[in-house]
Image 1 (cartoon, rainbow, N blue to C red):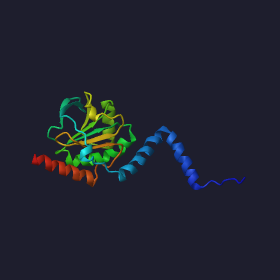
Image 2 (cartoon, rainbow, N blue to C red):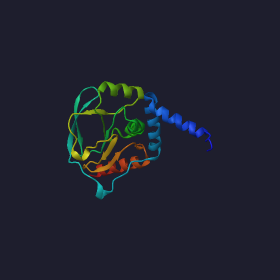
Image 3 (cartoon, helix red, strand yellow):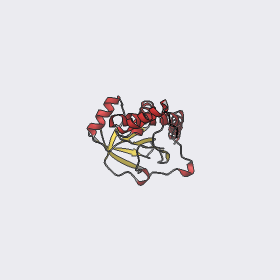
Length: 192
């Protein structure tokens, strides 16, 4: 039997696998892989007949300063909801796009980034990354139609409570497709 010669690609593959087992390198590698997905994956707009609807409600949350708030969902305002965590590689990969979207639409769209983590941990994360996002800690159970077991899960909800986008996993939230959708939803809102 012939001995197989190792190729450089074999060595790279073995090093890659070993790095995935080292905790300090695992997350950065997973984030990098998810960033590749974000670069090509724009969220999917639900077909009108497949759209679920959330009954308008007040989402009870606490902000980063510990202040209780009640945010309207489905009551005339376009809303972006993101369930995420600081330890989640797909969440980390898509946050720069969400930050860019928030920078341009934060004064016109209700943004809620919801996490169950300790506020101190979240504060360290957003400070380190330089994010300026509306992060909240839910104080109530979300309506059933907004419950999902995986993160990230993101929703774009129109002013009537129609769930226009429900996306699980990393996606490019700063895409032309999402911006066009938000522009259209905001124009419809003005016409109502």
